[in-house]
Image (cartoon, rainbow, N blue to C red; front, top):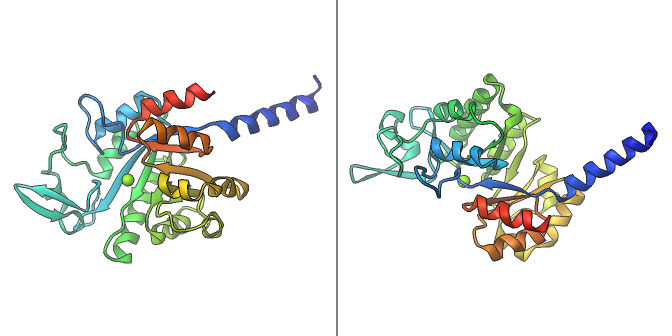
Amino acid sequence: MNQKKLITTLLFLSFVFSATAQEVIAHRGYWKTDGSAQNSLAALMKADAISAYGSEVDIWLSSDGVPVVNHDADISLDGKKMLVQETPAATLRKVKLANGEPLPTVEEYLNAFEKCKTTKLIIEFKTHKTKEREDELAEKVIKMIHDRGLQNRVEYISFGINFVNQVRKLDPNALVYYLNGDLSPRVIKSMGAAGIDYHHNVLKKNPHWVQESHNLGLKVNVWTVNTPDDINEMIDLKVDFITTDEPLLTKELINKRK
Ligand code: MG
């Protein structure tokens, strides 16, 4: 085979593989397993141990400006409910996750992430009360990622358009996906985002958005897909990433189709 033919073949094969590869993202890490808990350091390490493409994590800014990890807008401490964004980090640290770990800061999460071998960190910026707080969170976290040289191993997602714009501004090379399900792929493309990351019901209603995204050079992620029927339906729709609480089952169903 001459060199030109070989290059053409390799290009073709890489196209075939990139067109068919479907990847699994562990929603809030791999937490449905012994010793784990949603958004815990253990869940991140366990997502890496099963070679998930990505491990998703939700982050907030504490009242005193510390990026922290939590899904809900509030936490419960000694029977009292408190908003994460209105509580100082030292108080948030007293919250215990279901596996006994203290609620992690982003700093701690990145310390653990540096030990991961293959998984990417999919950081969800939670929407805050003001644009200023959101901007502060985006600036701090993106700086942390860059200071550690982790920018090629991190992707961002958010329901907030402001966060999509902030990521684009602060790190134009970073991949950022929009979660809210209300914008067409054409609009997402014009925002400079990497693709859509929508609830599976949104894609069921708008199945043409998958092909439309691909035609525009965008990727498609879908959340949170947990039942075999839904997972198979999303595989058939040819989405690029499936975000799930069942990463092993999803991997198995994807491999069955190969
Ligand atoms: Mg999330």
